[in-house]
Amino acid sequence: MYAEQYYKLYHTHFHQYPEDTMEGISYLEQALKADFCNPLYALARIADKTEWERYRYLFRMHVNLRLVNLYLTLGVKYDKQVAYFYNAPWKRQNLESLDTAERVYKVAYGYWDAAKAESEKAWKMRSTRLEPIENWEDENYRIQTGDLDYKDTIDRQMARLSKVRADFQAMGPGTY
View (cartoon, rainbow, N blue to C red):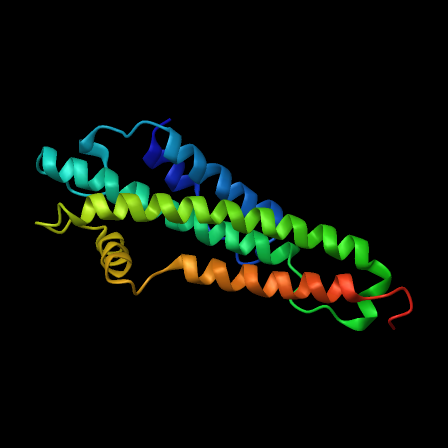
């Protein structure tokens, strides 16, 4: 199977259950590992070798961005947003859940770095716009201008998670 075929299997569920999110992650990670199809069957109209090269950079950038988004979605499922006093009896489980969320968020950093690297390569080749993937072009523009920066988002999630972890660790056995 080709990268484009795996990408077409990826879809967003209305309800984001962890197993649905993992399904999307699986398809997109396979898309990054797979070879590209013949340019004739690409998701954009490809006229020459330069457009073909740029298409591949944009494709990998876009897939990496979707993976960042999915890992953030998955992390939120394990992330307690607030350490309420009445959660004290489940302190250990909540701390374990926060550890899982932190690991998931850290994976998102890697995909963000990969998306930025692919974006930089595509940006250097921006002589023409590829149709019908203008939204990928827009993502490329937003990354290069700093308007789209998932590092800030992930950093905020990690900082809040650290505060919640500290709140849970400060809870004693008779907190509630």
